[in-house]
Amino acid sequence: MTNVYKLFFILLFIVVISSCQTQKEDVITVIFDTDMESDVDDVGALAMLHALADNNEIKILSVISCAKNPWSIVCADRINNYFNRGDIPLGQLNKPGVDRESKYAQQIATEFPGSIESSNDAFDAVELYRKTLASQPDNSVTIITVGYLTNLRDLLSSNSDKYSKLSGRDLVKQKVRKWICMGGMFPEGREANIRWDTDASIEVVENWPSEIVFSGWEIGNLDTGDDIRNLPDSSPIKRAYELYGRIPHKSWDQVATLYAIKSYEGENSSSYWKLSELGRIVIDKNDGSNTWEDDENGSHRYLIQIGSDNDIASEINALMMHIPNQ
Ligand SMILES: [Ca+2]
Image (tube, helix red, strand yellow):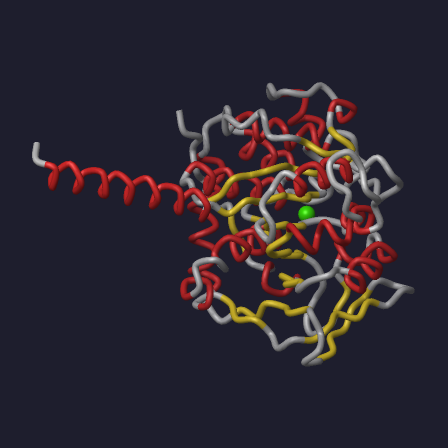
């Protein structure tokens, strides 16, 4: 081989390696914060994340429960394990918070195998947030919240620890690239994730150090999961939906999750939703209802649906029906 050819192959090798590295950096890294208890759409959203991870589009950094229900995080673990990701770090809200019943969480935890026996085996929620964020490059992490904002409130007010010298707020400012919040109703209304822990919601939205995108109740109010009974019996997704007893069902958490990932693609996401003008969500401290104020100096936006329910639902359905890679 002549030196010219050698040089060519060396250069080709460098190009291939650097493009692989670029691709790796392009993988969206996600923290999923969920109340996997009162409604079952959290289960559908987590299934979607695993499908996207199997497609190498994302990496699930951690799954954190904002619910006091002790079975919620164990249920999430069973889903992770079903998709061959039983090693995803799990976080549990240990401080005071919202405690609600579940029609499926304990059954899923009991009937399916996984990596933890109880919520006591999970990290403390704030500790895991801090550990996860501290380990990631600056401005890289996408947080998807599909439940109460209790953990984020506790994260913002956290102090330096063995993972980072930064305060919670500064850690968020340095590491978080995007926060998509399933919460609120726009331009006004009263929605569960915001109102169940109203105090936490107010504190978070007023103190979050960067932009927040809200995926409101009104754009998640579309049905998905029509074919979920066709999943194999080994699927905790199918079982959870059957236990919940509504098939198809609304898709608040799936819509927020789909936007969170697709928003990195630019044009595709804009065919489904557009962003509101800058402004701020204003939460009533008495009943947790919210209104919206346009303000060019604000740091909040909400999603406005411009695509069809059918197009959005079919993309969500395809991801929810994903079978784990072997
Ligand atoms: Ca939820």
